[in-house]
Picture 1 (cartoon, one colour):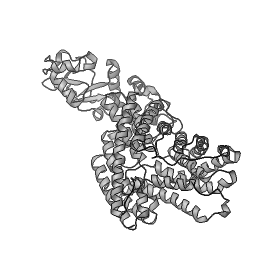
Picture 2 (cartoon, one colour):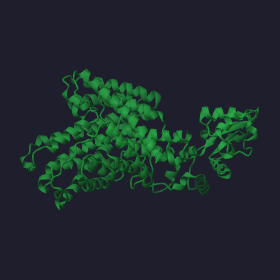
Picture 3 (cartoon, helix red, strand yellow):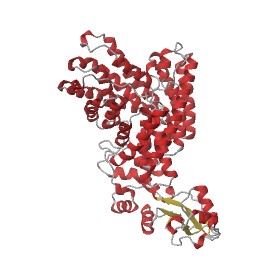
Picture 4 (cartoon, helix red, strand yellow):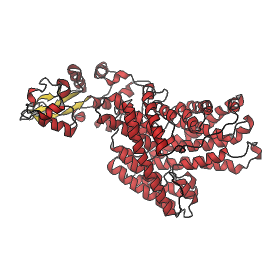
Length: 605
């Protein structure tokens, strides 16, 4: 409860700043276009649609992309692209570690991209920002691996709930995102608490009417007729085709941009700029596909909702179908170019936009025959396409029902989203997701030691020097107060003790021997008098299994690394071993078939 509360509040504040920056950049872009805003906006597409100077679109986006690229690749390359993937990867393969500075870099870079017309969503950056805040909060409190992973997912759920004001759907989505086939039940309670708190804060910061327009369904019984239920399955199959195409197009585009850097020698700073130029040129002709699409989608759903009663398809103008299809396809292309080139932005909001356009199109065709308004298919289509693309059909069904303002949508959305998710099995934006959870015993030194001894984890090419961190040691003649000051300055939980020749003679572990930090700061006692002489020590040439043996034997989560002459080389902590072994563990479980695979570069690092 404590972790979720702190994470939700912190993440909400950071994302509030992100939205404030985004609104400011949208206002600046509107000023450049010569448009006077009478309300705050977060969607560049509305500016682009009304602009008389369409040539400014690629120029503005070019400047935003150049600044974003410079910031990201100079300070934090991990902040490029979509954010959900990195959160899932951190949860499974980095022991929940996601650097705190990612939140700051992602906030600035994403605001620059979205505020100048990049076709992407705010939720991807927000999920990464929330996850980063959660992991940073847990690390600052010196919590363990499991607590940090909980905080990571709680932060991601809080971020999504803050943006879309969907506390239940956001929490289920965050817990569902981690695996292809199952929901992470252990992450659900903290995610629900964090998303509820973030929802309450969002009502105060963004306002209660920020979400998409609510639906008014006059005849709920009509939603559950046999014909209507069958039409949701048809909708799910059609949305599955678009979801499949969107995912494949995105990864094809991403691979193409990456190949320009690796094979053609394109400067990595130029890669996002090239993508921005291409998006800007598309936006000149179809400005509706630029920006987040949030306010435009809201306006379109309102228009769909207030449209005339359902008519037979023969009585409709076919230009409507063409417009909906073009919007869906062009949004797919523009988003793939934006995020695939490395620009910071999310894929969920574009998925909702595309799903709504396809859903409205299907609704215009089928709605008359089953007595269901086409706009309802637009809402259900959002859950169906996004649920298939992210393999989170349950969370997206609740998500759409919440933003649609009626629980009556849950069952139709579940039918369509489950259908599309099953039809596109194995195709997802989140390639770091496992097929099912790893055994919880993986996160203990005893279980890892047993797996290595039994050969359960094979082909481990990790050396001790590659894991050792350079903790600051103290000389054995130093006082406890000197050691305490180093611990305060560096954040170290332990202090290696060395002699005058830099040979390790012990370790100062205040938690193990029961020393209070306040007492240490006042004490002039020598560190050698209270240090552990029989410290957990390994040589830098020892195998990894020896590290775990020392940890288990001494009942600690660290070892001191020395050379053959016992000179100090560094410290290995248990969570770094978990992080290093996770790709090998996942790859060693036959059912996982996990991505990303361990490359030679990863093994060398």
